[in-house]
Length: 527
Image (cartoon, rainbow, N blue to C red):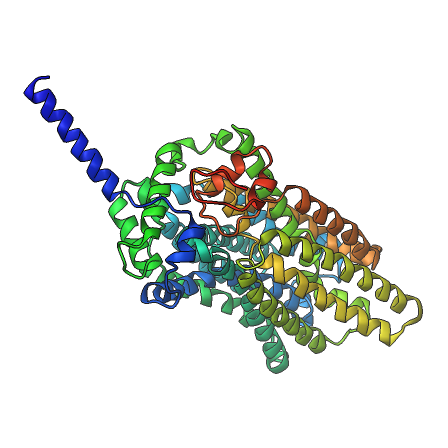
């Protein structure tokens, strides 16, 4: 062997030896958490929580709008100004449903979150929401008001979809369900702000012209305005940074925010190795690939992922929850509560109880697991709606005040049961089950599906409530039973795995069963 060849061989051997020494032991996330769990109250984690709280404000937009419209729809000044008759799909339904149409239109542009980054997409979204709010609050005709709602929902989709996308990728994997799941719980914060604003404005400004409903419309731009200012202080997704070949920035983020500044922590090596390898193989969506949807369906595992994304997106909007959110005053009127102030006050209480339940549920998803939470919730919702239907029927038949009170109580219990399991996971689970190269387009599919389900609900609900009354609850009883069966047979458990570790789950013959197996050290067969 020549000197140069020998030298090259020795150099390669030394390099290989160094790599072997420098290469950290390949541990699973469970093993790292068992032996080297980072301090969740460390400096890096506390900074991450603070920045995440800012992103959470994007979730208030949908909650604010849902309760705002449900509340001002009960105000005589609002309905008189736009000459809206009571009920009816053409009058009330289209004003509500245009929001879902805007969501579906906005979802078509989700690919840009891969192209220009999550932060930029959020910024464009919240600025657009502020513009839409101005159009809404100054609209002199119903047509302009409807256009403003379309504009508002179109841009709210940008921010509202890119935010959980960013949070899922920023969150430490062991707390992904809790931290990212907290995002959608702020839906109720927006709802509380809206219902409180309308309640207070109606109580004190009802005789001041249209201020009792105009003022709450103006307040809709407060939270997105704060996000527009603060989003530039939030780091970009490490996965997006790696895809843009900015590895040093991605590693610095993981060191600072997932390992509290400890560069030698094994979670740094685990996440960097998994993300780099996965993004090298799959990459992210580019603007030129926008119309190429084969990434969502080109293999069996990808079609399974897409099925879960679509199913949960639909379930999150079509379990009876949207009807209660948008039309709670109408539901209350059906069981004898006709006073406007009482309806508005009960709207506030509904949002508050939902927020408490959703916030608690976001933590339990990382303790109990997604599947068990979903199954328990769908079973509970079916029971609540069955009792609501029965008590509402009793009230309609003989005017029983006891039946009326029971019906209202179980509407609230239904809201709590739904919020505990579903609210925090609505935008998170559809993102978790997507691979890195599917996630942006998958979140677009999530918004399209959710928007379609919400459109059907909000457009049809006033007609159904008027024509069939409590039988509308009965329909959702059977639908929630179907959801329970679907979750049991098909949903995978995502708790306790990094987003990249979920790849092996979806490559299995039966992903549901694979997700429930106990994992051992890498290289060993799961039991």
